[in-house]
Length: 339
Image (cartoon, rainbow, N blue to C red):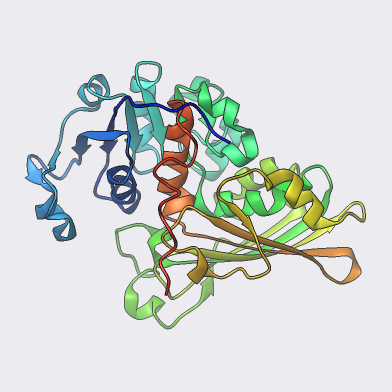
C-alpha cells in the first residue's frame, strides 16, 4: 500500500520543539530519508544549540530559535505545530493554505464549534474547523489526507479508542473503555498529579466521562456520548496507553472478521492475541485484540505508544501521505523497544 516513490527532500520545521511531542517529532524526522530540518522554534530560546536545550541531542548541529511562524512557513514545505491548546489556533489560521501544516494540538480536531467550546475553550477561527482534515488515515481514509493543506492530529486516548471501536461503526449498542496512560501523556510541565513521587506508586482515574477526547471517539464509532463510558487512568510508567473495551453490538457478528475487514491492509495495525505495552513502546504500531465475551459482549484490548502512534508517529504518517510518499516511510524501521 502507499504512494509514489519520491526523491525530493521535504523541508520540515517544528514550531514548539521543547514539548514532548515536538521533541518526539524531531526524533522521527531525523530518521526519515526524505526530510531536512529547516527550523526548530521555541518562545523560550533564541539561537541556542539543540544540545544546550536537550543534552541527549548534543551530537546534532541544529539550532533552536524564536523565529516568527510566518517566516518558518515561508522557508518550509511542512510545519509541525507542537503548541499548547488555544495557542495553535491563530498560527494555523495564518499558515493554512500557504504551507502544509500538521497540528498536534487539539485546536482543529473537532469540526463542530459548539462541541469544541464545550470540551476546550472559545475558538477564534470556527470557519476553518470544516477545512482542516482529521489526521487518522486508518479511520478517515488516506485519500482525504493526501489532498489536505492542514491536518489536525488525533488525541492519544482518542486515537486508541477510535481504532478499538471503528470496526463496529454503526453497530454499537454501547461501549465501556478503561484506558491507562503513562506520565508523558500529561506533558512536560509537572503538576501535583504527575509529580514522580506521587505517580510512581499510584494508579488513579480522572475526568471520567468528561475527558476531552470523548467527541473524537464517539464520532468514529458512530455513537452518542450517552452510549460510552470512558475511564481514563494514569499509570506509573512513562510511555504508552493500554486499554480494555467492552462493546455490546446490535447484532451477533464475529468481531475479528470485522477487524480484519477494517485493518487487514493497514501497515501499522497488528491484530494479535497478546496485547502488551512492552510490545509496542518506541514504535508506530498499534496492537489490537478482539474476542467474544459473555452475553454478547465483545472484549477489545489495545495498546499504543502515546508519543509515537498517539502523536508524532501519526503526524509523520500524515506527512508521508500529504507528500505522496509510501505511508510507512521512515516509520517502519522503528522497531518496538524491548525490553
